[in-house]
Length: 323
Ligand SMILES: [Zn+2]
Image 1: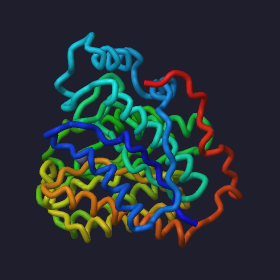
Image 2: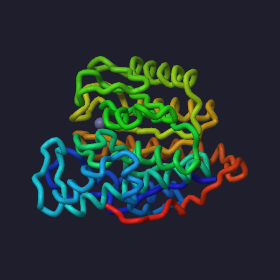
Image 3: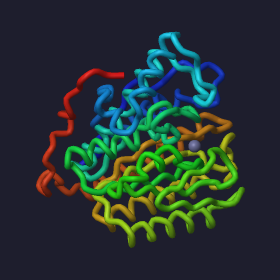
């Protein structure tokens, strides 16, 4: 069994000169195709407003639309342009993570070749994140009864601040964040935070990731792990200050997948951040994660349909109006 991958070319945005290389999405998808890794690509639909509103404030969504239409002033906290195509892309990323979660529940493993916009808050966006696909997907899948408990394993170098706030009052979502302490953002309180010192190397990083997942395992038994496989703990990252190697990040992926398998949880992986000096590095890091995920899916294909999966992955909720 091969794992399904979720992707649309509309994830890539024209942001000339911006530090966030959204071209990585198409580069990863192309590399996956060229290597013949995946047989299944699923096109996401944009998330419906009612899905987004499970986590975001209606005034914020209205404001985003008004900014995109030039009716209100842009907010510098966004750190990225806001236009209708940008909003559409974020809506697709949310829809993509919801779909990847559905597919993971049915098949064991899936990935959204995008997503991981963990800095978006209920009432504002920041750090290149306008809509929080992670928290919305968890809430939507929980709301449908497709899963009962979701672990957010956020291993981007930056703390998952927006997700932590959105999930704070929801005991069905456990937020775990292993990040660089002395870095953006201003920290919120996750269910489990591990702040690493600057220049933490493979040994320190992997020990922290493994330890955090084992602590989470004792506290929480998820049906689904939303894995933010950020590439920015990499030593050469421009916005990260850790010193983790590519081999270290590959080991990290294995640790996360091992944890999920021990817990009997499905995994939906998201790409999250990555701001390398060389674009090729971020593609290689994400690609290695996808290779391992597909290898696991092939090995562990475990017919989750028979294990009581109730929803058809493509069905989704009623689309309603979109972003
Ligand atoms: Zn990051």
